[in-house]
Length: 177
Image 1 (cartoon, helix red, strand yellow):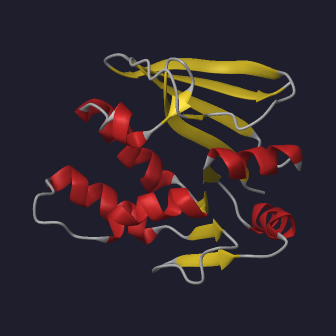
Image 2 (cartoon, one colour):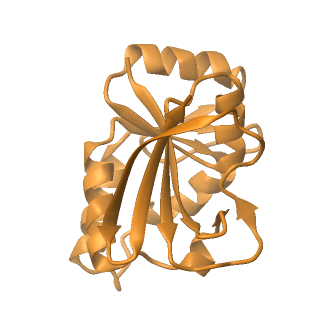
């Protein structure tokens, strides 16, 4: 059985905004390359998936690490939960209806870690009791507003790990209490 992990980069005040937080420092980016390489796959909400489609490209200004990340990401299966998207890109499956049943089936059929991205999707999966672990990657920036990491209230969580990923980037790992 696979473990469903919700994790995103966030500001110290709890907001997720890849444009304002900016790219991770090189050492943290190496961490994320390894994470993607070791992942079983990814479950995305439609908006987050559209942002991640950036890695389907092969842009001339990319360096070797960008290409390594893109190759790892492209090789992994992706399940995109969306009612608005009509199609998805390579190595991706659109889940438009009864996503809870589909994600339960996915967890039962796969092994390893499947990463969930998108606060609204994670909220729905949390309410269905499907998220096994929360990984908060804290970046040393305060945004003051934006999309919160948690899209709604959560039952109590229990801290099971904390570690410095690189420089000032810290990962906190929680499980449902």
